[in-house]
Image (cartoon, rainbow, N blue to C red; front, side):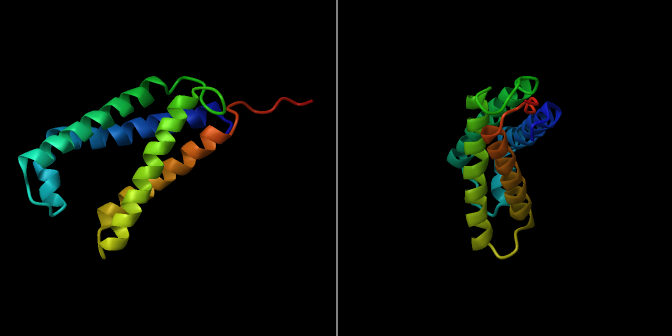
Length: 134
């Protein structure tokens, strides 16, 4: 993924996905608990709202860094943070998917997270600019 425009698209897509999750967690924690079949509690709602705040913070970071040269040694902390978030999230969602027989939203979330984890792994491990001819 040496094309800077693709990396900008990745950062924009990541920001949008995280912002949507952050807004849902921040403003509808009880509804999310009910949709997941969990008992609704005030303590869990607070934890979900704090998770939403973290999602919104990472979304803002990605949004503001979308124009920055990223990859290799450039903006490495941003790429590494996103890789860790999406990889760990994909692993957790994959575990949840195997425990639940039919959970289409979990399958979709696991696929999105896995795709973003792979994209950020590639960004982190490759140079952002095309190689110059020798």
